[in-house]
Amino acid sequence: MKNMISGERQAPESREVCRFLSEYCGRLLGHGATCLRMEKNVKRIADAYGKQAEITISPRHVHISILNQDKSEFVTAISSSSPCATSFDMITRLSRLSWEIADDHIDLQSAWRKFRDISAEDRQNKWLVCILVSFANMAFCRLFGGDAVAMCVVWCATFAGYCMKQYMLKQHVDIRLVVMVCAFVSSVLGATDYLFSLGATPALAVGTSILYLVPGVPFLNSFSDILGRYYICSFSRFMDAVVLTVCLSVGLCAGMVVMKVGMF
Image (tube, rainbow, N blue to C red; front, top):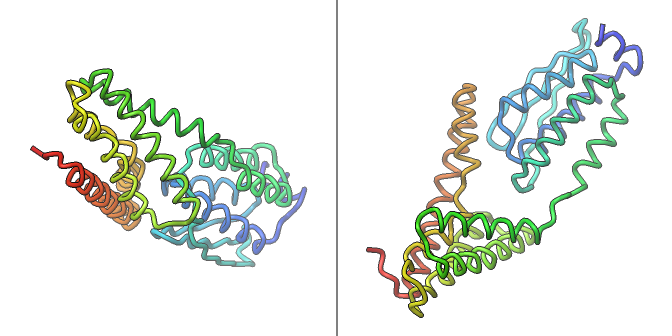
């Protein structure tokens, strides 16, 4: 009944639905959505417009096929992932859009408008995020037993490194280089506790100053994709996470060598 009402109100062409879903999936993939979430959202939208959808997700591209209910029209599109940062807020808002299309029966033109508004609007305050990430890293330092001096050093090191990360990503610098440079900067600043003998836990200041760079989301998405049997994407995300971890380690070791901080 829902599909019938939706079809009576607008009956969008399969080509237009396919184009919309192609852009929609590219944005979801770029923001770090899991494969299972992407597949559910796509099929929910396609069903709302009276279509059948088949989706194939690869590490950098999404292949979508749209078929009419009467199988009279078949359209296929391939889109690449949008170059954007991981954002749970964006993923949530895009998923909410799929529910609005399914439950409120909004037409395709309105869906396009809402999608463009979501894609263009960045509700995150970069300075606030930077400050909160610094406090979170400082809390990790305390959790591992760091003293007040080490916590303050970690806050400063994280703030400087995260600001640099935001700037370099805005300049479209390769993420691997970004991680290495930011890990180097944060570890150098974190080693000031060693250099000036400021506190009793200088090792913790160095070790926790780079925790904000740990690629936790790719690791978690990789595990989620394994459970969903998306093995190719799972392996790709796992390798991306491993590479970023290696880059983090290189930057950390370089900072420790420059500051003459022993690893053992």
